[in-house]
Amino acid sequence: MKLSKEEKEYLEGKHGNAAKKAMEILVALGKIYSAKRLITVDSVQISGVSYHTIGDAGLELLEDLAKDGKIKVPLTTLNPAGIDIENWQCLGIDKNFAEKQQRILSAFKKIGVIVSCTCTPYLIGNIPKYGSHIAWSESSAVCFANSIIGARTNRESGLSSLASAITGKTPDYGLHIEKNRKPKYLVEVKANLTDITDFGALGKIIGEKIGGEIPLIRGISDADLDELKSLCASIATFGGTALFHIKDLTPEKVKAPKKKLYITSADIEKAKNSFFDTNEYDFIAIGCPHASITEIQQIASALDGKMVKKEFWVFCARPVKKISDLMGYTEVIEKAGARFACDTCMAVAPLKGRFNGMITNSAKACFYGRGSNNFKVRLATLEECIKVALN
Ligand code: F3S
Image 1 (cartoon, rainbow, N blue to C red):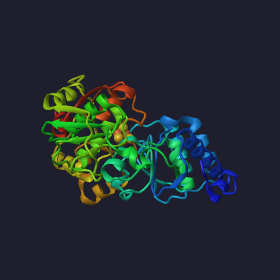
Image 2 (cartoon, rainbow, N blue to C red):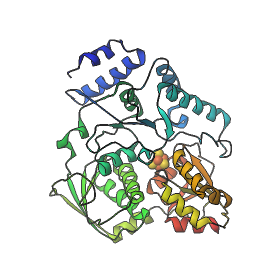
Image 3 (cartoon, rainbow, N blue to C red):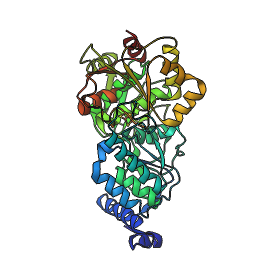
Image 4 (cartoon, helix red, strand yellow):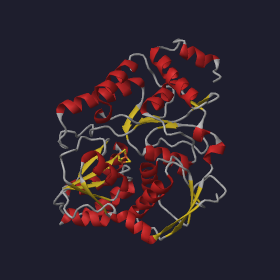
């Protein structure tokens, strides 16, 4: 791999120890993927933030990097942490866990990372421009950046994205290269998709059928932002793809490939029903990926003047909650007995053993609820979730 004078200086340690380690990581990655050079990135999103995920080893590494590490990419944000930073006691999080999590966040802050912990960075101002090179690591956000925005990122790890934040570089391979962004499958959707759960189910089917390949999806005439973020989360979770195209909806113009796949209404129903483990719920979880202000507004409107009878948590980015505060939605939602869980999510917070049955409108949350937390799950529309909460 050809390195510039400055990049070589990073390797020689002339920009400090953290910068040296960061450059070593990127060069090693570049060699593995036969990248010819490093390219400049102008946005970074870092995963591997929860103490639940990275443990003491990750904490030690971050504190070591924070000794002299500084970010070069100002637009660098974090994935959800294991706690609500301001409200962890009310959510029943263990004190030792919270302290370790705070140390992780302090280390990131010292490095200069914006400690807004969310998997929807595009809702809080980390919005790259079309065609720009970025280094993001949360799978649903990666898919959103590539597919909906048309920015270019591989699915980075927590460490490689942090290395990009410190050096401002990433190896030029994979989805940074135009020819690798072409679809391999044409997916014809013969179903009327009307709800977030339909889009979650569609992502599950496509992901399971074509794995990490890139699809061109046809037959979706419209989709709003919340439906698209649900599709991104689901397709990435169930198949691992980091990019899809939707005819007449996503920005990159691509030719239809020959390999075809059909998806019908019956397939969508079957996929939704595959997340129906139970009729008994003690946890309603909304906000995977993190809820938008529109979703919060819908929840407030449905809960206004009512009382929930079960634990009802809304996961969102803290800046989105601030808008909710401003608009009075928070007051309505909290008066109804539901809670906000900012900066964190149902997959990375230590929730195992806390609940038995979870109902949610997110296919991805069902996957992690089952797999990581041993919950029995059910996928249902927001209206159905609210009905369950009130009865
Ligand atoms: Fe986000 Fe957590 Fe879901 S990171 S996409 S809320 S599993």
